[in-house]
Amino acid sequence: MKENWKQAEEDVKKNRQEIIEKLLRFSMTDMLLFWGENKDLMERQQRLWGPILEWAQQALEVRLKTTQGIDVPEQEPYTGDRMKLFLESLSDKELVAFFKAALNMRSVLLAAALVKGRINAGEAFEAAYVEELWQSENWGVVEEAEKKRGELKQELIDIEKFLKSPD
Image (cartoon, rainbow, N blue to C red; front, side, top):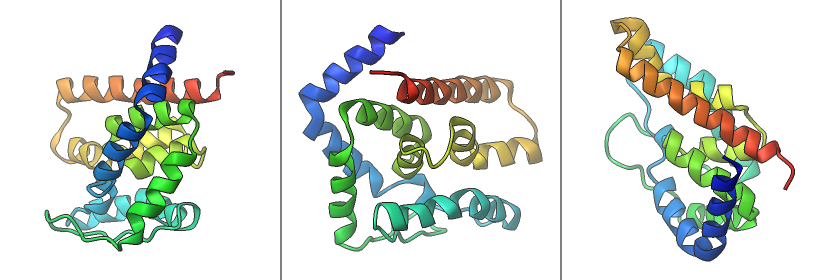
């Protein structure tokens, strides 16, 4: 496992700017920008996502617009610049963890919060999969989806361990 992380760090060193550019494009479609319409789901999203959006506003100096529709909300021009500065400030190790977490959770904001210790792996998982978890509570558990979520949760735990491990 440790060798996989070392290889990933080497890949980041070689492709750092390309990875940052991909993450910047991805950030404009972050899942935390797209809210549900069901009252109960929205309350959960507010409880889990609201603090992350507030943290991002302070820590990353970005104010992100959200929507309940499917169209990507247009962000202020400075948002990409602020996000790029944040990504460039990450060490190679942090960028590896960030990239893996962002892909796992479909959210650069949750990845940022995890990498910077604002949330732990369990909190990140709950926030990233709030809609799926809500659906399984309301309409029943799909075993295959439950198994996949368990694997994704373990990946987040592994990312958190990697971040806390000595270099």
